[in-house]
Length: 194
Image (cartoon, rainbow, N blue to C red; front, side, top):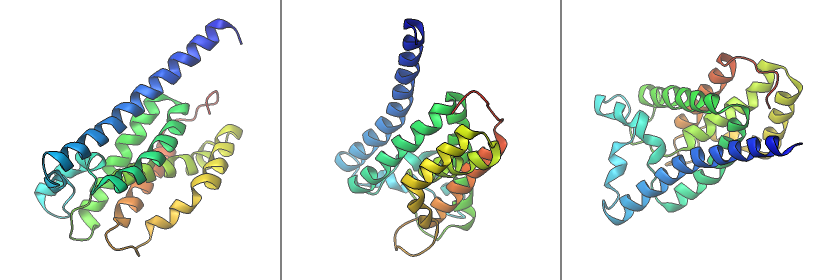
């Protein structure tokens, strides 16, 4: 690997850090502001199923969390799975993010329990769905290998799409995952990327 290749990789990794840092930074700033300034009132901007006002939450929900433990629980898988999506292509990251937010958000709005739904876990599950099913749809050795690695590391998350834990939006998990699967099916195949 020559110096030019190393510089290109360094630029790409820096861009990944900026993209993920912007998302995660926004989540943390929003939660700090919510805790310190707004006394938890920002959460009212989440998704409220089957109420017109709840539609605004579709775009805001990934940046709203119930408390710091909730945010911490979403931060690490968001960074890990988000970065694995970024390894494929930065444009694909934004497409997967948009599809997961829209499918996940509208799914929750249409079918969710009558409560406020907040948190970035819909995106986390969207990235998970994309990475798990990309190998199936793309059928390249690299994509299949990455899908197997993701199953090994994060396969246990799939149980989060089932109802069972009070106060957890399993609907957000389920519809976010479906959004990721749709993105994996919809995005074009890439032979040269991960």
